[in-house]
Amino acid sequence: MVTLNQELASLKESLTSTDRMLAERTAERDDLAAKLAARQEPLPMRIDLNWLETFDGKIWDKKPESPPAFFSRKNRPVRFISVVNLKGGVGKTTTTANLGAALAHLGKRVLLVDLDYQGSLTSMCLDDSELRTVRSNKRFVERILEGYGVDENGLKPWTQRIANDKAFYLVPAEEPLCDVENQMMIKWFLQGSGGGKEDPRYVLRRVFHSAEVQDAFDIVLFDCPPRLTTACINALACSDYAVIPVLPDERSTEAVPRLLFTLRTLRQNHVCPDLAVLGVIANRTYATFSTKTLADREEAAWNYLKRICDNEMPDESIRYFTNCVKQFTNEAFDAARKKRFAFHAKNFGDGFRQLTDELLQAMQSREERG
Image 1 (cartoon, one colour):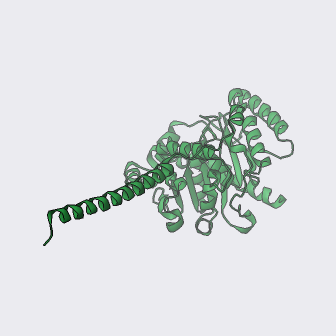
Image 2 (tube, helix red, strand yellow):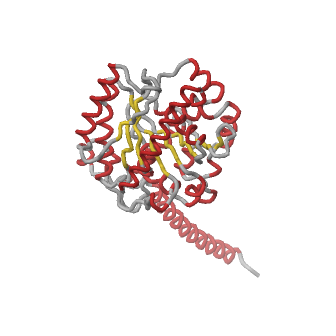
Image 3 (tube, one colour):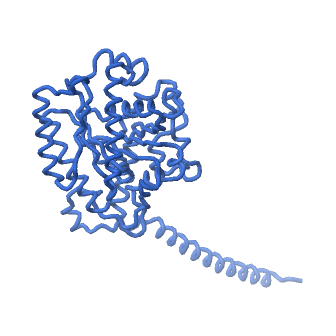
């Protein structure tokens, strides 16, 4: 028979064992909590603050460490063209859209890529119903930059047919592109561009220099924003050629040599060593398509532009396109409202066909020279 003293001794022994187990579990808990806290601490930023204080803001100029391959145009049928000018309001979007329409009219398989978060090219190419569908499916270019399913599904789901044309497509853009671009740029800057980090300058090159795109299109036109954004640098690093629309006035022409200097720096730093300046196009002129003669004031600005550009890039033969784009008339605006593009207006259609022919000839001539 168990006495009271024996029962008390047994209870004390059980209590001592429980206290010991509790202490062990408490120690394990504290150890796990410390490890978890250590993992949740932000990683130290690998930034040389002394270097940061003298940083000139040219984040994209750094020589790449191991960029994805730029497939030679000799080995592919598709050509990539960036329509670019770092000055706004010079008609990049209308030039891109109407060149695309003219190329599609010639039977070329054309893809337009809107890279400006304002989405002007998207609004020009898609009607309200099509735009609602794109928004519902979230099929915008920023998703490509973020890498959503492109590797698994290819580029096709992100393209939208224009005006029910089987050979004319658009990758649209909208305001969230701005946030994605900033995030990519800042993340790359803060984490450092080395150490195996993905270089955000080459996302579009990996996507567009694929067998799928080479088999599907003849011409890809990138409508670049008037800023050297993440999307813009991606277009330049992906492109064979840059085409520069400019207004033939003094203030607009002064921006072109600055752009040429930027492109030359990017080439010298091997960011986009394969990019060639195809030429400069005079936009919104008062010239006639029959004579292609600029007004006196425009002619003076155009000749001044030639001098300063040739001085900026003396080692490269820059083409100054003979064909130019006229100021829009009511006829052009009516055509744009009814059929989306001023190209469908008779006079403007003839002009853009001539400009497109010259564009194709310029590419052929450049490639024959090697």
